Length: 145
Image 1 (cartoon, rainbow, N blue to C red):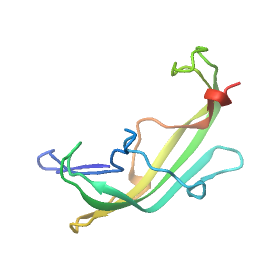
Image 2: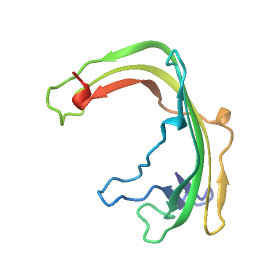
Image 3: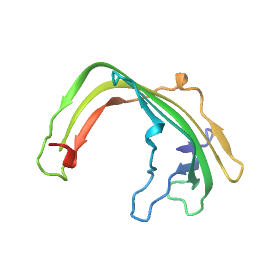
């Protein structure tokens, strides 16, 4: 989550999960209990509280402080499902997946704080707008066949 000074447009906070020793970045493990999906598969909600991350202030900043974030994101699907079939047999090809997706609307609320005393809370999810969202299922790799 990047935060910018509204008057200058300068980035002032970069809440992120840091870079793991194996090179994976900006990624955290999400417990199964954090995600709920409706029986019809048209709605999903991700709820995370007090996730330990860092605030590196700017993208790839050298200085960082401990931080936590909490968020709720809800995806609500509508319309027909779109079916996607593998575009390749090559396991490294990004089109090698099978999926069923619906167009969706996603709304969310976010809050966070760092050990320097800075904190933020987003406006309610109902006031947010999104550019793109989907909800569905996908299989790839050894689960594709």
